[in-house]
Length: 247
Image: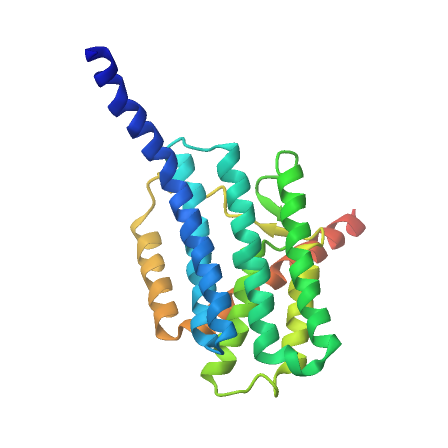
């Protein structure tokens, strides 16, 4: 009986550790669901912000799982399903309700391109992430694509532009994000950055300045950052192509 009592807390603790990254994934899923609900209620700014919250939580769950050594096949599958909702369905619905609804079939066609591209991007990542270069993503990551679409909606709302006036720009950006996800373009993954490694004081100072820059004007800065990241894959592909032709 005493032996049973000593083992039980250990089992509960072990289950609690495995629960932690999945709770973060659930939080990201809830943020995506909240974004959908707010878009249906025509509260598009709240919906766009929820996408960025989902992106932060999605970035944390994987790091927490690796730091606590609680990676599991269940967690990987759950994370992929959460990503489909938060970075696939939610952004396509937000941009459709905000700008693309009045375009008829062209509107839902553009939104569907983005949605199906997210599903294909996630499926490809799940099947070949062990064989590709860890330093680069193959195609634009779905969180970055979602931030690009949601950031555009957010910044346009902040400038007072209506969805109807921006519908063709929104459709073009949505299709661009979708096609970038299913492309073979290389996008830097930032996985080689070691958070446990000591860094110079200047790095900490620059990180503080980075957060200060975002806080100065969140919609514009975030949209600009993810637009630059989305274009970086095309620039890197062009540089590699130029290097090959030169040799």
